[in-house]
Length: 366
Image (cartoon, rainbow, N blue to C red; front, top):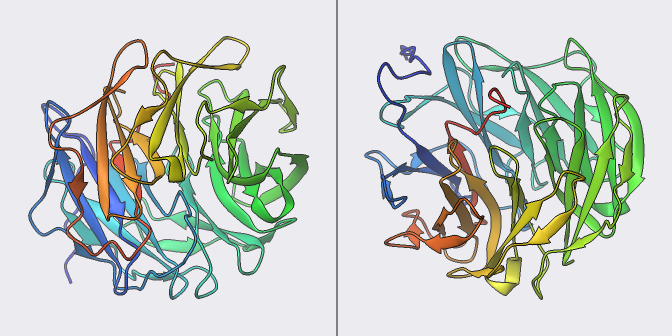
């Protein structure tokens, strides 16, 4: 197959896209174009086959992510049914996906659960494997998106990891250790190798992580818990709870996923089986406060949440429907459903849908 190289930046205006990992057998990625009002339309060719199988039975919130390195952008989706990761080249104008050479890539234990995150510079992809408690690290080809496991990978963890995030500084990786009710921190070396910093208590089964643009705050949600942990992240990678942590999501249901708004003033969290989305303001200390009207209703049970690069829209994966809810986000953090919500992926709701956006929010302007 001849791979067409596609520039990551549009000459005039960048379109926005939403992608879901459908987590079915066979697995596919559904791709939506974002309209000016936030509504979604499946793009031609969607859903795109990954060449692998989903089927993990866990609501893993981060099984799909993007990476941009140089002039190229890539999408990665976990196939937890067969222990592989699929890679695609993203066409930034149309949202179309082309398989990366060698995809899918062996990445872990079949029937485990993956969480994926890329380094801010797009050089490395990190993946959990909770069946054999470790983290795989891959270097990303800047031309093709092909993955190559780095020397020393996989790296052992102190428990089953289910949630990863690299600090915008690129210095640290934080991982939710669901089996240990803890969050682990690792220093990232120049080759992508991981060095453990420490393991820090969480208020429940740590599931998903987020780090702010200043790389000095970490947030964690815990499966089955309404509590959100907030930590100060030090220059050495240690974590310490900030005053008032943990904070309530304001819902009666636990959160499975969370995301900070691009400029950092709000944190959005899925409220899982409560069919709601929480919107919380972030004060200078890192403390969280519910915005007026939060939590906001969703169409069904929610898992992962994501925002567009400009922060105007928030999207939530409906894991029991095979669909996506869309919201507009006001400057005050108030959410309102966009026209047409919910938007169906075109696949059976048997899988556990997870979600990401492209272009991804960045901290370049912070």
